[in-house]
Length: 308
Image (cartoon, rainbow, N blue to C red):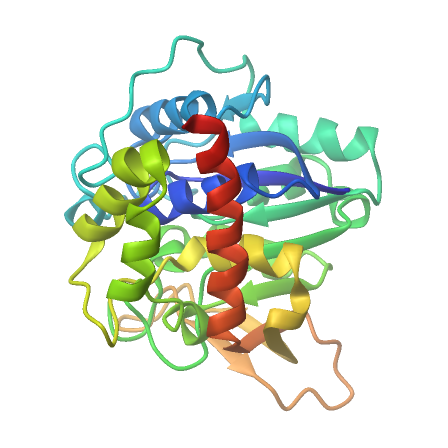
């Protein structure tokens, strides 16, 4: 059983990543923490709560965290994820509210209670993780692994240089990459290959309530779907790595996050020429797309069987 703590900003692809977790019996989800990112914190938290109940994740705590970046500069992606954050998916509002406290404290205390057992998976801006590192530097030692969706070694998506999660809080990302652990970085170079094609969408459509209420409307609103390609479900790649690392090729690298560049703020400057330096990252460079979708859709089938 793999223990996982998910820090997220739902978000269409966050929702699809949570559905992957919900359908993976080998994963024990110890908690969900939320951050302002794709949409504001109030909405990311409401979406996480709605997803917890819709996906029947039980009593997994949902703890809200940082509403904004470490520095007062707001970057959002509602133009991609819709005003509510989940595209055209319309889930019932949650009946239960979030846990008390702050996500950074929840991360610290959860890792403190089970050192070496829990993998942190961060699929939004890294503000909560940076605050956790500042409050208790030993989280670097207590986390079994840290896997993020973010960054890139070739391109950006929010602008030519920067991927959205990094640009939303570059200072936080710099703290996380410099903290002393090895960050497994699932960046755009691999996640953009995890595309929803018409073949994938057809399989989603067949999954009853899960397909009808979440998967299909979320994926369709995320981008144009064709037989050759479509929108990428970026965040699910970070979860898929935890489930089966053999799906990915990862290469050691030294990654620095640009915080000052006029045109390159948020860029993950990736140097594969490690030499005698310590690699602070394992950077995803390729993905077995067929096996990825077999894993993801198989998990979705398990969720669909429960939901009807």
